Image (cartoon, rainbow, N blue to C red):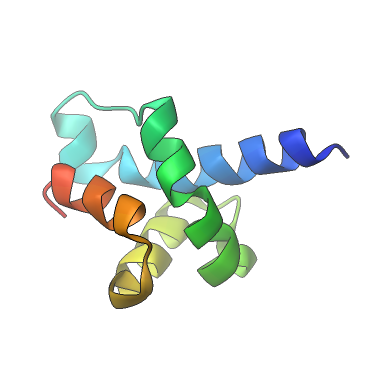
Length: 80
């Protein structure tokens, strides 16, 4: 598989979880910038959960103190 395809899959898996709950209620689906902001964190901390959107979201929240500044801002912008 190509690296771009794998990164796109990781990005979508990471942020589709973010689009649920409060984010979905606000009509946000995760912009490409938001997806990019959290893709590395998802692959670093939540590799075993990729493909399970709610698990990735929970995993990222569990690692909140270790998230990159950009990904942390995504969570803050969605009230999480």
